[in-house]
Image 1 (cartoon, rainbow, N blue to C red):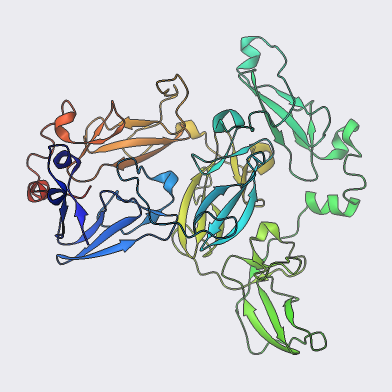
Image 2: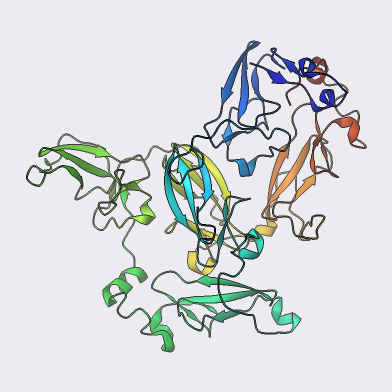
Length: 474
């Protein structure tokens, strides 16, 4: 196992043997490989052990104290671009991650892969999958070929004052949808939740009975009873006090059939029948059983399954930020509506909605605030970190004059730290590896001597002095 030396050493004409070492940079910790973004090293009392992230994930080297593999969208792998050989499976170029649809003209669908098993996810109406960020964004932000024109609508000409209010217009062909014209110029299609229509008078989503021209929009699609149920929904499934109780009534398989069958009471419990003998089983915590699913694994996200009267669930196995071990969950702070967490076996990945959208627990996606119907949401541009930093309102542009999706800003007092503004509005503090500082010009971590004012930042650091002989990671 070998960790690589600093980039400064590699730029001084040293040969390959000078750039590699079998020693730990520090006695204990986790250290990134200098060339391969999904490889890292664990050091315990000076003993080094080479490790690999699961295929599709890369190592997060923000802190040597934490062993964490992350999605590539969250990590800068510019200086260590190599990756392990992919292990592709059906619709999954790698075992884990988010991947575009194989048909380049299908822009609103993508695959979410875990251990080589995929789920196809459809973006909210009007959005397309953005391969650079791993989430659904507006077509003008994704800049994906064949995906710039996903609907036919042009914003009416309005004066600047009206344009600044982002006017809304009813979809001329679909009562459920409407268009928002950003600054009066860029059209973005948005939709009301199922059962509702757009009320042009109030400029908000409403029930069909309140909009004369759309009163019968769902006729033949939804019954009056179904509309009533949408307006006054049943309570969500609740946690049962028992998981698999031996005292439950014995499930009887249909004749001597094989197959899987739902439990009549508990939505995440099901039975496997083998020659007429039933074995009770549970879906992973957070998923529920879908008897209509044709896949072998019929456990799915709750928002994809109609549990009907099967309202009980197994007791939750919660972890930090994950009310259940699997699923999509809102931010614990009810005022933060544009951030949610994707939990896989209790490990949470934070996801930020595209600008202006809120997370909707009932659909598991980001939607317009009207559709989400959440209350108490704060303005994302007012979010501040503990040190008082908030994302500047003026967008940051690149050398081509285009807005940067996730702009980065230098820390005013700490050369090693910097801020990332997710989607331009949600601030996150991050830091360079030990021995490096943030270079505002290149917007990357760099050697101190290359950044004016930070040349002596690590002058009195014993950790850097110890690793200056060529043992620094990266």
